[in-house]
Length: 514
Image (cartoon, rainbow, N blue to C red; front, top):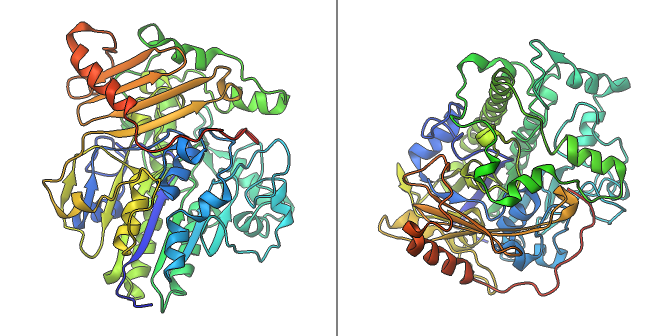
């Protein structure tokens, strides 16, 4: 196959807010290499995630489908292997691309109720030989981080469990010393939830490992075009970067949200219900995990500053490795024919409205994500403000590779916006059927976002939430049902009803919680 087709290098983080993508955004996270990508390429200022949590959003990126079409409507539901194999990676592999995945995939469930047979399942991972490298989800070569996030009280899986990072980490974890270093908090200790300054050497951190393995993969690409998804597990909680990244931002100097106290009396009923209901899980351990890890208690300003400083440090550590990967592209002579994309799966509340992590409150801190593209044919210093989705990357990759749009997907190529500044679009879609095992209440949420407004409808109760993002960017005033904006509300409700694409008739059952 001719090398004339562009290489595609897709780099993602996990849970990185759209306003934390460098100096072109509003918060103080420094990301100089992503900033250089934006200067030399195109960024999308109104890109949203098709779902605000990991598994559905990642499945949508891979397949180009909305969650209720591919079936991964919540965490804990595995992506059908046949659907996964027909995503962009499988399609590109069929026309001669080398396809690789490095890092956190999360196309199938890690914390399962029982073994499921997938390489990401904490039980079934032991069934895979330590030299196994795929294929998986359409990618011919994979090197995986299973859980991806180093918690303080739960060490990485111990071989034969786990996958490539876990095997690599445990080779350095003599007598558990490496994990003890990770769990050791260097001062100061503010008591911030899920937050500490890890004593783990930076060389042993997942972000360094992903960067190293990505560079190694690039060094093997010689003849055929390649498409590689490089997936960093951070800045997902726990917020525990190693030095020097834990010291990069002084807590007194980070920015806090203007509105950082709970205001549930001003919100639809499901905000309070999702925070206060008991997760409906029979397993005591998993129920406590949902209550204590997925929900954080209120934080003082000092604690939120520490959390934010560490979150920013994790972003900068990823950006450092993005720079290493870009340097490798240059050194290997691959840069001139490689389109590089940087994005994330979804955002993080980080104190907005007194909230942390993620949940069924579709604020822009969670919904809006960064998206930057650079490379051959990508115009420099181009900003697209049309509402788009990371789901659109599937059709975009296929377009640049010369593959036509696939039947049955909702993804639309972003190429017209890149090549024609006059291109436009009205709306982007997000949807989430949240299970009661997550937060004790079942919700069917559908969201549409335009350049100026956002409407979320809860389909079971018929209640809704509407924000004027132009006049109320911090989303303080819920205008749902306000006669003064009734015409806008009707227009957005029609957009929800016109949701494109087929709906899966029989949604699969959960096999775990995440």
